Image (tube, rainbow, N blue to C red):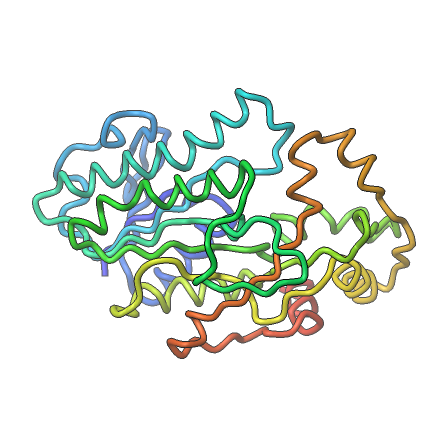
Length: 298
């Protein structure tokens, strides 16, 4: 297979590219800098990504993973526009490039997020649940809508509604490793809010599964089957590291420091991967304890 990947140097993109190449795929990386062999330069802000009409012709699939970090700073007006452009704008540009190809790729896996559901509290949700409220839910709704022209043209589009990806190399867990090792692990707010997580290993396996699953399209939750509360997650990570986690970070302090984005960190996402399981995907690390053990040893 010949597969193009955006954000191929990121946590998920680099791991996916390595896994696909290990399976014998020819991976073409779309990059913003001057390209090396096996890469194509693109500009997500340009019409059709700045790509020539034939750049994506003849590929078997495209995996679009671009997006500025959600928790990368306060959500000022400029920051919100950056978040939208990096997701909605880049997806629209890539879809235009795909449709301009004489022989467009038949499959598009495009990043999305469980932010679609908004704060679910204690309520479990799956892919049938409607969009929630708030900036992030609206952003994800528009992000997924940006790929609709590809689906309308007959391309199989899968929206990867991703939860917290556990890896010691980056993401939330990567940022928590140092304070937890120093015994400064902290429960956030009440600690009763749910976290929907998935190991990087299972996330990559799920992407490979979805590339091959020709009957799957639309939203798919890339979360493990065992969402846990923040308090449970904090205790599990501290226990694996043999460190105390007695600190509590009050919600008021978090809101004062981060503003609107704190609402997302305090929100509860109790999300189930119903469609992955319906189609026969088996998680290698479905439970949090063994998952953290695997991640810390990886």
